[in-house]
Image 1 (spheres, rainbow, N blue to C red):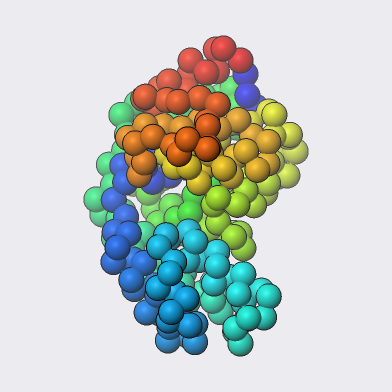
Image 2: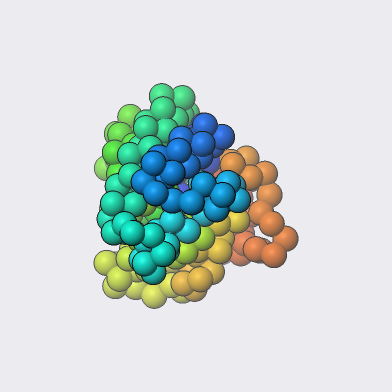
Length: 219
């Protein structure tokens, strides 16, 4: 049995509702206003890469902005779209029942690229907030997935090794983050991605949320 079960939020606990096209467009406009090169921004296509690359630019002094200002600027845009998605999110089948079964026997964690505001409201809305022992959001890290910084924070807080935990998500980014820090990776079908990329093989593929219990029994 794993000591910790860590989950992604959107696409994993709830269905995927984030407006990627409009959110990325709005974030790029904000970053342009802050002084980032328009041509470089046009080449970035993903939500995660947009935040990570602009944060790296700030940290390495390639733009005349402190990293905290970049994070604040893009975070304000992403918070808006997080809360917009929250109005449409629906809890996946068997989530509450499965977490309730796991809760007395292991630590349950959340590692999400959503911001703290939406993540907290989502757990409360679906009445599963008391089933989580620890939560790390994009507000708590410098770089988001596929970087494993948030998972490292959780492992350190819990005082456990990667081998003692599993991380379940719905994208290749989730798998790569888990593998970066030596955590078993579970991919749940039917979220943002139907299947992971071929180069990012998960340790487990889950076709329903309750499949996590079968993994527990095999361990």
